Image (cartoon, rainbow, N blue to C red; front, side, top):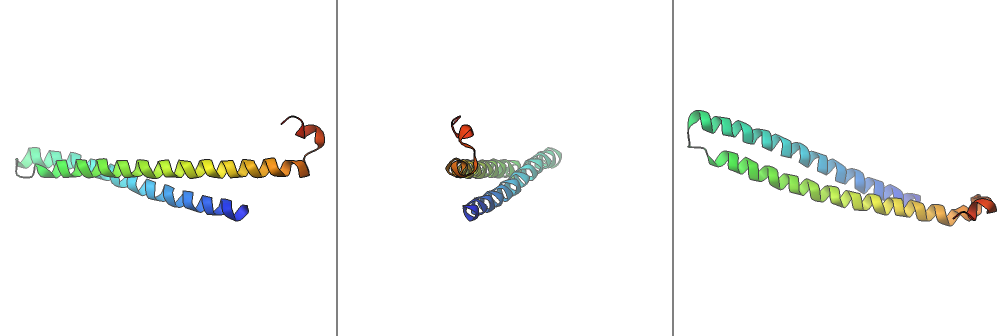
Length: 103
C-alpha cells in the first residue's frame, strides 16, 4: 500500500514538474510574441511570420500543459481513493466498535 502511494506521488510530482515547465515556456513564448509584434511594427513587415509562430507555439504549449494537469489530477484522485479504501479496510482493527457504527 505504502509503495503504491509513493509510486503515485512520484508520478504526480513528475507530471507537475513537466506541466510547470510547459507553463513557463508558454509564458515566455507569449512574451516573445509581444516582443516580435513590437519588432515587426518597428522594422516593417518583413518578419510578420514571427509573432504568428510564437503565438501558435504558445497555444500548443498551453494545451500540452493542460493535458498534463488533467493527467495529474486523475492520479491525485486515484491516490486519494486508494488512501480512503485503506482507511476503511483498517478501521475495524483500530477504531472502537461505537465509532464504526457511524459509517
